[in-house]
Length: 214
Image (cartoon, rainbow, N blue to C red):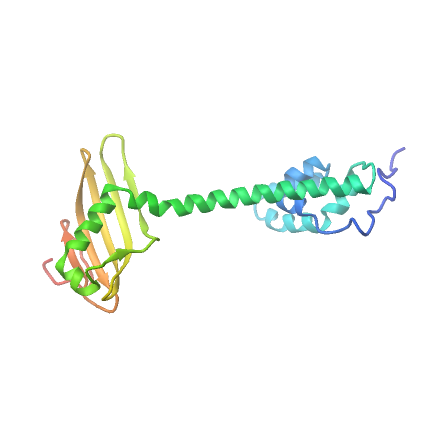
């Protein structure tokens, strides 16, 4: 009969009307599986930021009204499975993103351009006097590395370093031609010191605080 509720009672029992983690985590996917198509609004940018919380708060009520359930236990078990699946997807997604971000320093540090930069810095007398013979790089470094199939490439690094005498940041720019890297710019700025240590400046890039003519 038209208009007849799918479940008895028509209104969700109070003990089942709780926050729905499956709807929150999986939003529109959960909506399709629970015949709650208003969840498709979660596909709209900006609206989705609000909709996931609406689904979390009202998802259980909508699922009860929009699908036929054998009993309360089936409903409870199904929504629990959705919550577990949603949590698993989020954990895997966050873990994957964290792995990608965490792998960036390893990729940069594993390059020949990075090793050339650090070798030059560690052997420079001025750098050792300012930072120490035990100069080491931090785990997190910035920059980019591009290598083309034809052997050309470009690399820029911003490397925090520290030693027994002080801390600083290494800035470098290297270019790769025919498979060989060459350093175009290599500068070390020591914390608390105005004048940078310029190791290489092949392109005569203006460097604030550096001696004229370098």
